[in-house]
Length: 64
Image (cartoon, rainbow, N blue to C red):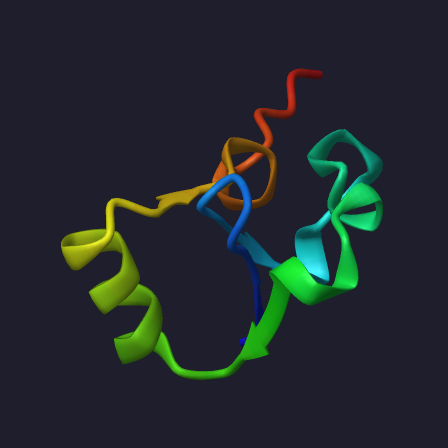
C-alpha cells in the first residue's frame, strides 16, 4: 500500500483511495511525501500527531 503524506495538514492518505474530497491535488509538491512504509506512518501518527484522512481510510457504507 502506498501512502501520501501531507506535511502541511499532517494528514496521511492512501494513494489508491485518495479522491477529490481529500484535496491532495491542491497540496504544494514540497509538502507531499510518498512512502510504502507502514512503520513510518505509524511513527508519524504516534510521535508527531499526524492523522489519517477520513475520506481515504473509511470504508464506504453501501446501502441497497
